[in-house]
Image (cartoon, rainbow, N blue to C red; front, side, top):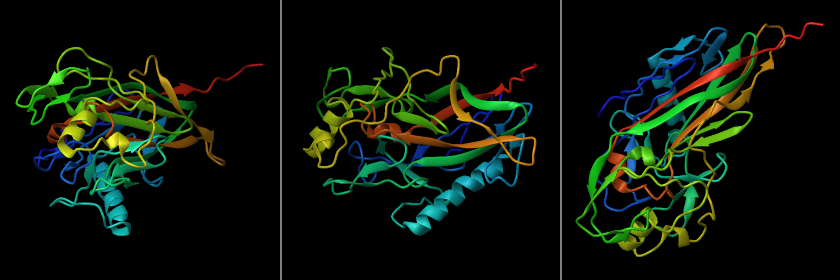
Length: 308
């Protein structure tokens, strides 16, 4: 199992995640073998001057130690797995991820194993969800300052004829350059919601921006050719997915901090989500054998003191 190689760094907060697949899968989308394993989560979470971070509201850090992040991920998984023993665990007790979809970051769904309908996906079993608490002195908002999603690209040998996300025909036996980064989503839910996907690219690996419109080409057509059913047509399939942006521009405000009575702190919290969007045109099985690196930074806005 490869270790997570990227770390939580940058000006205020940075977060990195690597997912590696357990083995080779046969069909695209939500098949039983179409899962990725989070092995070890090596990370550093660093706060800028005047800001502290916590995962439990008890222990506060200017830089959250790697072992604290690792323990939280595993604890979240064990709690959910014990309550809903339908997840799959690898040999080191880490969670297993699969392709999922959502319209609002509140409920995530995945295709049933028998492909007859949809079922609820479980946080920290099928996708990652981490709550991060913030306290700060003289800061009143938190914004995403930068966000980078990368992954190693590789050639996948198609085993069926299908139409890719660009509308081009792919012949069985041809090689298609793919990357896990093209199917990944990163979501932040604080006092506002922000979802990120990589921008479109014309160079290999070609990325097709999904937005909130479910495509009929790419993974959907590949799934159809392999399984003789289009996932978009399976009863209960959503008409759209949560919308996304491909840039954070000069900053995206996601959290308003409020005064904590009896202290000098302004506080708040947000949820961080990481998942593979099953309806993305580029969510082929082969991407789940690849590393995914996510790096993001946050910045705070100082409290403005008005002098009479």
